[in-house]
Each structure stands twice: as structure tokens, then as C-alpha cells.
Length: 119
Image (tube, rainbow, N blue to C red; front, side, top):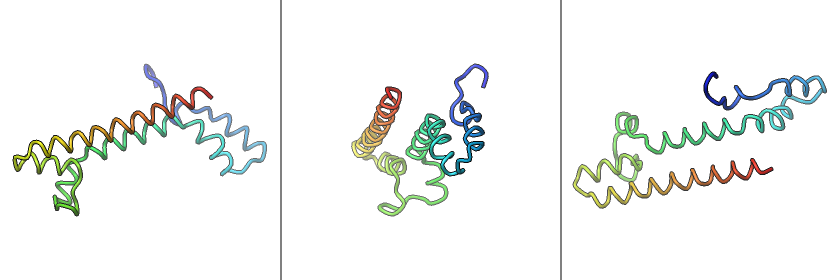
């Protein structure tokens, strides 16, 4: 990747896998002990992005499933329905809950990454 930092399998040196296979190590051992730790940052970045996308998802939920309170409600659809009915304080409360969840997850991921770098 020119001009940016490669993540995941693009940054992984596959020579380690080839060397391990020539030593007779099993594929599962190579995957769990060499490949997964080597791709950890890309996997974490992808997981955080997928989580953020799912947390803010509104379009697919409202178009495919609709909004049924306590059955198909997500935070995004709840915020919209509360705003639409004029309950701005309720909508704001759910926005703050969504923000707290997001901040907690990002903080936890950053702390885990910092802890891994120190090793």
C-alpha cells in the first residue's frame, strides 16, 4: 500500500509461515501461534470499524425490519423514533448512551493495544 500503513495480512511477513511449515508444524499451530498474532492490529482495526458501523446502523434496520418497540429496536431507530415524536430529551439520552458505549470500546481497544506494544 503506497502512502499508508498496511494492516492485517498485507503487513504480515509470510516467510514465517513458510519457515514453520518446513519445520513440520501443523496448520492450526501456525495459524494460532504465528499468523493470528502477526495480523492482530488489522483484526482489531477491522473489528472496531465493524462495531462502529453496526452501532450506527439505521438504514438497513429501518428498511428491512422496520421499527417495533422492544422487538426490533436498535439505538439508532430508537433515537429517530423519539426525535420524530418530539421527545428530544429521550433521544438525547440514547445518543449519550451510544456515545458512552463507543467511547468505552475505543478506550478499551487503545488500552489493549498499548499493553501489547509494551510487551
